[in-house]
Length: 265
Image 1: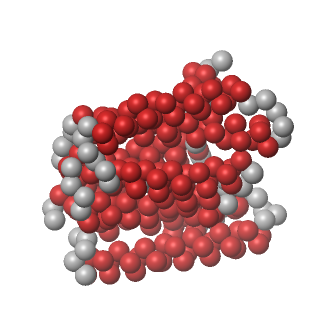
Image 2: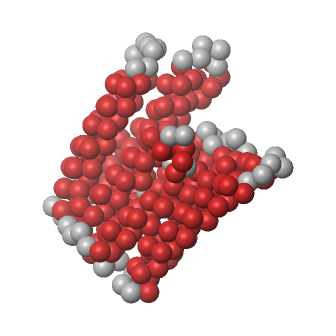
């Protein structure tokens, strides 16, 4: 048995990026690493990993199968979540983490229920999951700084908008690989075009209004260019390794430029 199987680690590589890039962004903008950040990191990681056991448990229960092992693993991760997270509330008095955690958990629970019913690839389900995962940005900022400010909201919004880009783009690439799904291809192309056109309008508008600066647009530039290039170029076979490396590079550009956007404010 592999380590991943033994620990019941989530299989989606992109989900790890969606969890940790916003977390690092929040810490970078706060400009401080402390015990609160470490405890939040451990607690967040435990609850994130528990989702895999929750899915196994719910699917087994829905099919009338034994789910004792998945239940025990789920319980272990929930205990770790509480052990690492409770000092943040009881000792450090970071009470705003409670609503953040509840909202994030609710979004992931809805996504988990849909995933248990084999609907995890639905667009709404994936957007809800992204909304929950990117809650780590405001949570990390709050834990590191001890301040609850409007900056926390902007960190979450930018992180969610950025991560959602990949959902639209990947769906388009996947449907293009199946020549029989003409209707799905057209729908994915249209959704991709609408969403990224929205980014091209919304980001400059926020910059003009003074809410963001030019670095925010630069942070999104690689994925916007990637998407429009992919929409109009001929369909080719996806090189998964190359695509994965590029996504990491794009995420690092987003992380650096987004952090500088707030640090320069």
